[in-house]
Image (cartoon, rainbow over all chains, first blue to last red; front, side, top):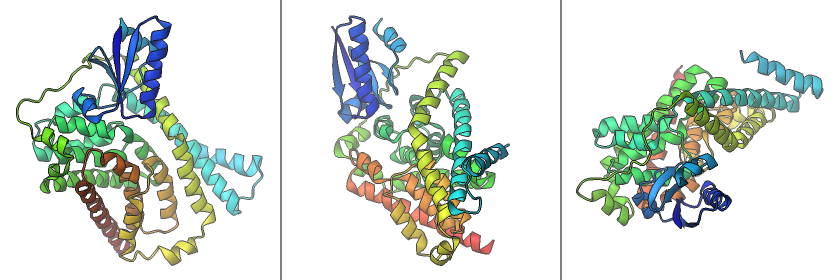
Length: 77
Length: 329
């Protein structure tokens, strides 16, 4: 089970990022738990300066855009 | 080179649609078609080219660069980076927090945030094609100065006192700052750059196409429908108070550079004084109610009020100076 955190202040791309990861993990049989983190201080502490940001098991792997399937493939490898 | 767009608009408006070239509606539509077709072609090409060049620039690099720099160098670089980094107002807060937690002075961060919406490649394309090179240089110089001086003034007032308490405490913390560096620094291949530029062009065009239509639409309306006499009677004399009033009204308005430049072109063509036009348009772009609402999450009312007053005074001065130059010249 991988814990995925999507950091974002609730903008459209942030919600789409969460959806994208859900679809991707379902298609690839990856067991994930997705948490949406909207708290500003938490976003700051994660060191994310452009949202949406994505962390897998506490490590930030992506920021600034909705990740593509190819990028997710890499992050989950 | 741009004449092809005039021919295109001639053909579409007067031949295909058969409108009279002397009528108001014919002139408005011609203006609209010529400007939108020109703008979209230019934007498409230039956003791609610029994105290709700046593919390796990101906000983390900007932050690392600004950290620990001399304050005065910081204002200038903060403002310049604000102009060249792509920026969407929905990421202004995380970016602001990232800079603050790296203990970059508030003034330097604000120099970045104030200049960012005013200057970007889209604004420059539009200004260059609609208003010419001289005006573009003037606008860019003013946009940079507004950020640089703003940063200086905010630090002079010790603006960090008026951040929300949790953030102010973070800013004053002692000890080493630990910065995250998750993005690996690899050399980009040409193909990486092409991918980035392609995505960037599509994302930006998707975001701004409606603004181009709105801006040029309003511009076309002013161009064809509002008689020059109306401007002559109401706005053309550049009475001193028109400048602060225009600024005061425009600061809360939510718009962006993409929409405002075509409007600016039409206002100038109708004889509205340069200073008043600049004041109205720059203050409409620089800040807005949605932007202040977002900043309220990290700032107290005092700081927001200070930013508002700064913009009001600084932009009014710009307006007055250019109205005077206009009258003398």
